[in-house]
Length: 317
Image (cartoon, rainbow, N blue to C red):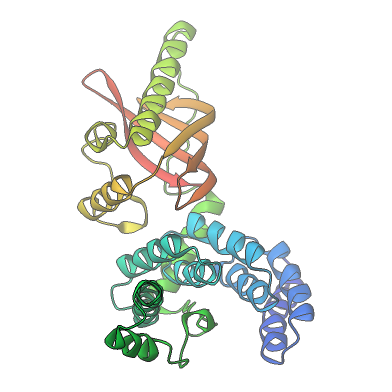
């Protein structure tokens, strides 16, 4: 990239942020589109685009932007916070709570997310008090509680975090995001397999069928919410993406499986290659539940253990 092109790319991001502060979201969107087109892996640029779309009253598009960010950079808590705010504006309170809990799990000292979670619980409490008063208008204490909850200061719907608060790409968060972007662009983090030499075509076909069967079984166990069977598809040395401890990762997956409602996970377009007794797989994962719908591309590495193919590595992208 030429020096002039780099400067123009940086200017488009700063211009977008400046125009947004000046109350000109339409021109800000034009500027950020230029930046994102030139640098699609820049988390800050994509995050800024989400903020601009939210400011313009285009929540569905903003949700799509932040939703893709949490898929590509699951270690960043700020997009989860802003997803929660947008879900709350649409009265999708279960999705909002789930997103905030994820933000807090990633960043236990994230004050904005804690405050938003408190506001969300207050909103749910307000609805419950209103229902109680409909059933029994004489309940004075309930009316007093409702009045306190209706204090207009600091509503959740106004706290979509802006740059410097809800997207702090400095320190550890910045390093993590930049490392993730570099890994995605370079294909790092999951080994790229080269064709296996000295293996007969028939054996490779059999191995490919075995890998595919394993992944289909993994998706089916996830859909059944059978946590024991689901975790059995992972190797003993599996490391969750984003540096999350395996125990915490398993607890998070288990909580999600215990939520009410149907869960459906499908894997499609499975492509398998082999090298060094490992299988590297690229596939499309379709995840659907009452709380989240997503379609992502995943790269997975599987290893043989006691005659079975088990998942050793897994990442989005």
